[in-house]
Length: 305
Image 1 (cartoon, rainbow, N blue to C red):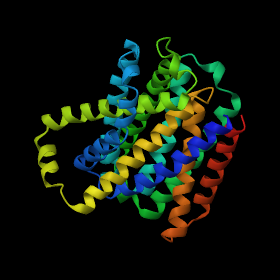
Image 2 (image 1 turned 90 degrees about the vertical axis):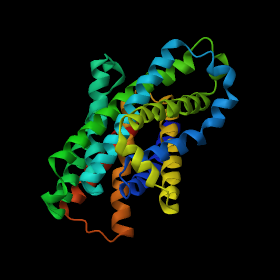
Image 3 (image 1 turned 60 degrees about the horizontal axis):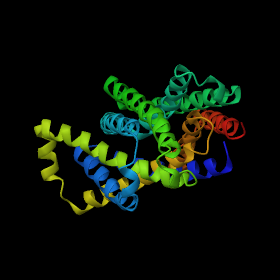
């Protein structure tokens, strides 16, 4: 990975850990729906400034956006259900550890073996071992009651959805950059990533709106979700989630393969653990220390490849 890609991913890591900590406190459809609308509105000026480019996007890009938006909506709903069924300290490490594994498997299935080095594979393996150890440590400390089969199902679902939209977005954002009709974006990878994220946000909102009109309980939930604190948190998560993923999309344009970006994003887990120890006074035992060390070793292996 290049220094630019690493810097972009590091910035996204901080935002990602922060907005997930807020989202855990409000694991509902209404919260997720409102936060996505806020994020989409935040990036709407990017679409306006590139209106002439939007109409020139190839048909393949629109297909990428359609399915990526669907995967993001599914992943977000699964994330909310996972947070409702399990503690953040258990669900977050598990989702974050499974995500890069599925991305690497997906890259290999798509025939991208040449872009993935042995160092990358070893690094991701170390990250998986570390995050799994951290998750087991939390389960042992908190008790099995904090993690049910339902929680596991939604954690895996969220990780699979993450794999889906990560691989689709990697192809889509490169298609935007390399399209012959968009010469003005060839020398501006950041603009390509932001434009793609801006449009994808509205596709995600569209798919969530489909579920909203099909589920009466979701509509009822929206009508009661009016407190200032809830709206404030939705704004924070909306800004944090969209900004963090826009940075990831831009980073993809500076990395040789999406697996590097997906793996290095796992720095959010040791960051979250550090916040828990320093801010919330959580205990760190031998298993947690081993897990964090393994993850950091894996991150270094990916960064130095």
